[in-house]
Figure 1 (cartoon, helix red, strand yellow):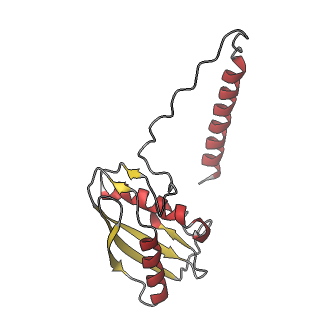
Figure 2: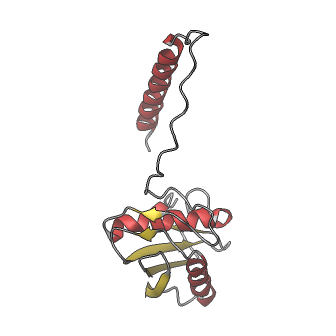
Figure 3: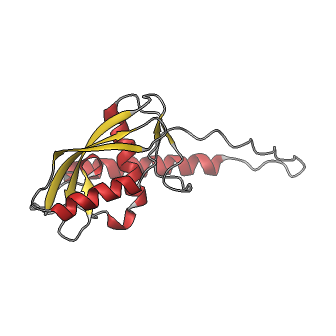
Length: 174
């Protein structure tokens, strides 16, 4: 981002924060003799996937995606949540050890049923094996409730350290 955009977003965030603080400061406390209402029961969790919910294995979440492209975001978020210590932080260097493009087929309950390489990093067979292992171990993925089953494609950007980013959630390259 350019400095102008960063300043603009920073100013917008600061104004929003100031407005919220002002609104909070203007509230008067309830009278002491009034019993506060009981909190409402917890709302039903939103079907949008933000990260994995611990289950026996993998995510117990449901995806609300209506297209394979939308599901790709849920799948990438799920993999990141289960592999947080393996995600490359920051922008990737210009020369990567390996780049692979993988189709992942997910059934109606989120199990991986098929992997298909569209572009395998053949010079690095250990990376191919590790990516496949990582995807299979992440099963079950968020169940594609609106799609029934889904095949989504993502690009794996692999650093020589063994850390990676997925193109869907990448921070870019320097």
